[in-house]
Length: 304
Ligand code: PPE
Image (tube, rainbow, N blue to C red; front, side, top):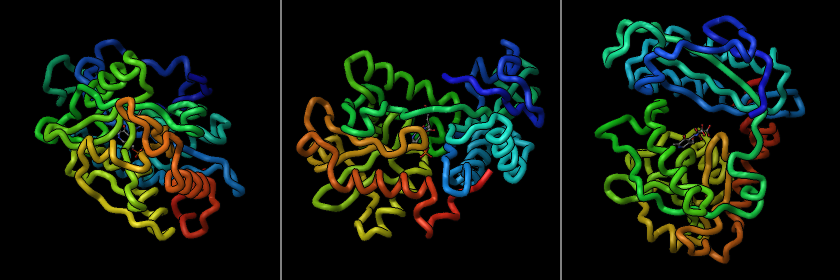
C-alpha cells in the first residue's frame, strides 16, 4: 500500500509510522472492532467524500450491534475524516475509520478495555484490478458459507467477521479465480468477500435482500437508486446459484470495488463473456455520481 503522512488517532494527527498499538489490544486477539471503507474523489469543486455521513452512521450502527461504546459523534468523525484527507494532501483516496477495544484486559469481557478510534487514508486504485473493471473478473462460488445472522450481525462491519471473507478470498485466489461469491446458510446467494452482488435477467436488475445475510452496502444502495432513476427495473430477490448461471449480466458493487463486472462464474461465461449494457450503464452512472456529474445526487458528495 502507498503510505500517507498522518493517521488520526482519537483526536491527534500521528505520523504514519508512529500510528501503532500494543500487541495485547483486545481487538487483535478477538476481532472486537468495527470499521468503514469510504472513498473520496476529485470533482470540479475539489475533493469530495462520497456518502461520508452515511458511512459514519453505519460505523455507529456497527458499534451498537457489537456493544462497542463509540464516544465520537457522527459529526465529529465526519470532520475528522475530512481533516485526514486534507492534512495528507490527498485528492482521490480510500478512507478507513476503525473503532476497536484496546488495552485493558485479555479475555472475552472487553468491558475494562479502552476504546480506540483511528482514521487512515491513502491512495488506492482498482480493488479487483483495472483489467477487471474493463473486461470483468472470474469468480467462483465459495465452499465457505457467509456468516449467518444467528452467529453475527451480517449487516454490520465487525472486524472479526472478516476472517470469513478472508477464507473465501484465499480459496478463490488459490484455485485460480479473482473473487469468491458466498452462499448463505440456506444455500442462497449472499455476496462477494467484500462486495455486494447484482444480476440482470431480461433487463431486470436483481440483488439479494438484507435477509440473505449481506452487508447493507452503500454502493449497492447508490447503484440501485441510480439505475431505477434511469428507468431500469431494480428488485431485491432471493437468488440461487442457478440464477447466477442463468443471468445475462452479473456485477459486484462496493466502495473499494466500485462497479466491477463478472465475466465468468464457476467456469461458465456470464452472457457472452463480456460486460453487458446494464453493467456498463451502472459503471457510468456510478462514476458520474461520485465525481459530481449527476446534479440530483450532489448531496451524496461531502466536500473536504
Ligand atoms: N459486502 C462486504 C462483505 C463488504 O466488506 C463490503 C465493503 C461490501 C459488501 C460493499 O459495501 P459498501 O462499501 O458499503 O458498498 N467492503 C470494503 C472492502 C473490504 C476490504 O477491506 O477489502 C470496501 O469496499 O470498502
